Image (cartoon, rainbow, N blue to C red; front, side, top):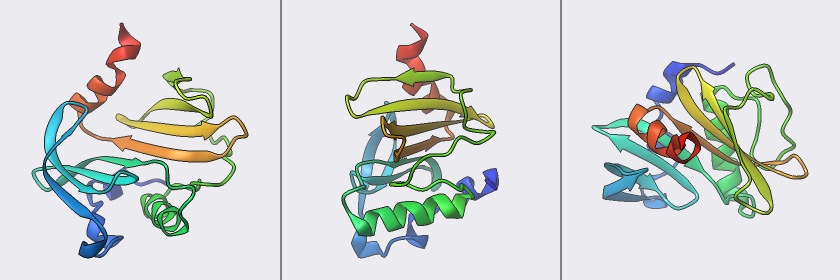
Length: 149
C-alpha cells in the first residue's frame, strides 16, 4: 500500500545511474523554479534537494523505461503498472477531481490523494500510460488553474 513518506524520500539515483539521466539546474515545472533530473519521459523535480514532483509519460514503447517507471511505482507502494490495464481501487475510482480529454488517445484523471496531486493517463482501452505525482502546493495550484476558471 502507498506510503506518503516514500515520496519525500524518492531519489532518482535509486533507480538510474548518473550517466542514465540529465540534470537541469535551472528548470521550471508548472512555473515553479527548481532542478529537474531525468529526461522527457521520467522526470524528478526537486526544490532544495527535496522531490516535489514526479512525471512519467511516453514510456510505453521503451522496455527499459517501462521497467524503471514500474520500479518507481512499486517503490511508492502502488499496485498499478504503466503499460498494464488499470484496475479501479478504493483510492482511484470515479472520485477524481477533474477529467481532461485533451489527448485523442487517452484521458487524464486528476486525483487529490492525501493532499497531493496524482494524474493518471489512461487510454480508451483502459491501459495506464502516464503518471504524475506532485507534492508542492504552488505546482498543484498551477496545474489545476485551468480547471478552476
